[in-house]
Length: 421
Ligand SMILES: Cc1cc2nc3c(=O)[nH]c(=O)nc-3n(C[C@H](O)[C@H](O)[C@H](O)COP(=O)(O)OP(=O)(O)OC[C@H]3O[C@@H](n4cnc5c(N)ncnc54)[C@H](O)[C@@H]3O)c2cc1C
Image 1 (tube, helix red, strand yellow):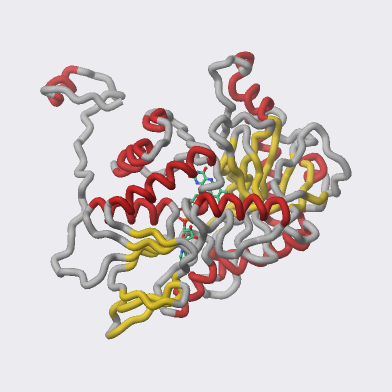
Image 2 (cartoon, protein in one colour; image 1 turned 90 degrees about the horizontal axis):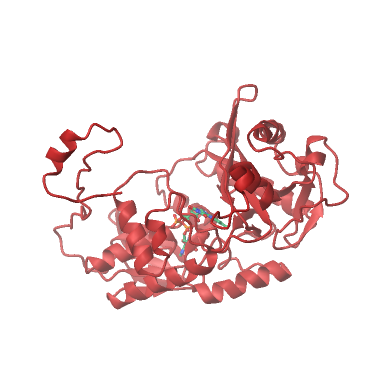
């Protein structure tokens, strides 16, 4: 809670409580404009969270930015994604990773950030202005939900346009063009656009664009990430573990969890990630013949299952070669194995926890039904993940059962594979 009053320093000096401190007013408006007149309007590539807030900030400063987004507007994109989930027909430009709102549009909308930055307040205020519930301002684990998020994104897009900006969908950055070492133009879906100031807000899945940028000698580094599976339990099991005997109290919402474990034996971290209470496991592929899973929730978080990514750390030393894009090739390899294992058409390989721990294929479900949106096949997950990831997941599951009783229950469902943490 921020309290504003007169004589703050004097009051603080009288309160001897470590939880009460003087908060330095930070300069929110710390953007320093350039001194040369720009010939052209600035261009933002991508309309996920990074692109949205870059464009909004530029628009507020009077720069009238032009945004190009390879995917569709959020309403058209929703139809395209739902069609993919039903038929397996993947649109390579507009999908769960690409399109208005970015990768998190079909998500739990958890407002997760591990940074402490005064601009977080700006982001929350803008989300509320655009229609997000006001409690996100004070809830410790705020979430918006995919249903509300879509309206919020549209409202921010309209605000950028009202301020003189432009937002173009179905428009992909394909090439950069320089003169004397300076950016002069860009090619967007075959059209030349004069450009001297470019913001690349392209997320982590636009692999063709990364390849193009690498060819253009844009400097880049390989990064550590994590891969694994989605795990599903009955939401009630998580509620009982977290809330105890009060778990049915009407004021309590679906409980979440966050688990981490460091394996000394394997020298790897295993952790839960993007936990979605009362949510759904979604097919989140963005490339043909490669399978990716993820999770989302609606604002009410009232579905039967709790799901979370269960992932193992991977560092650049795990990849072969020295290209900065080798992590991407590593992801592609395992996504392809998972696609083939699921039998094609973006069905996911699924194994029950009891069978996974005993290295055998599952033959029937227990009480937990996989919620994965594009169908599933019983398969052994060891056939689509590295053996060190399988070993680490097993160790993690045993350990997490000590923290959440029933975590390793026989009929909990594992869905492969999660690669885009
Ligand atoms: C299903 C799912 C659920 C998630 N749930 C959560 C959650 O609950 N909470 C959370 O904090 N995080 C969540 N995440 C992660 C979160 O979505 C990302 O951290 C976030 O979206 C990153 O923002 P970004 O703007 O950097 O990139 P992105 O959101 O990936 O946006 C990049 C945009 O750039 C566009 N683009 C890429 N290349 C080009 C090009 N060449 N030309 C034009 N446009 C291009 C893409 O189409 C995309 O829309 C989730 C992710 C997924 C996939």
